[in-house]
Image (cartoon, rainbow over the protein chains, first blue to last red):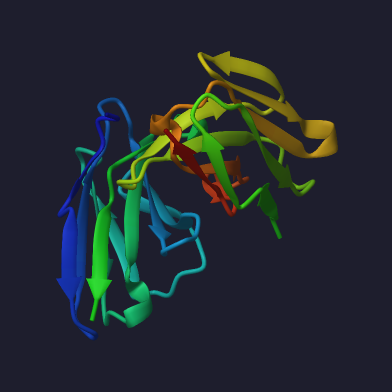
Length: 113
Length: 108
């Protein structure tokens, strides 16, 4: 196990709803990155948080937003859910500036109906 | 933009066999990691290998940065090696760009 936890493990939502996913980082890590993995594909970078601010973003629309808290844990919020948002959402924690130390959580499986 | 391609896309092995997975990447990156994703979705770091060769038990990896490729070797494969293997490059923005993956199935 990596020490990175995510909740919930599974979630079912309907189109148009909003969802919040949570991630607790590994002890000693101050950076959290979020990835979306659609079925049969590799993970795609959504955004990264450091010092409670977004620090880099992939090709995702603004309805994907996030937060980082003083204890370095993080939330991913998705508004106006679409069917294509169905995926495994992974968070990874690392020490700032050392992406090679990213450790991944077990993921949250989101199904949008 | 960044390009990361892996081959083969699928691989089926008998338990005990050896295999080589390949990752080709574009010339705009030079830091590379290998991951194993188990059937439950957990991604595990295998190697951080920007260049040279590293070994960890039955696994080893070699990156030739000047020729823009990396190889992952699995020897004496076991059923627990099944899953998807990803290589990923570290971008200038300190995030990971993943390849297309190789799905490995090891049959008893």
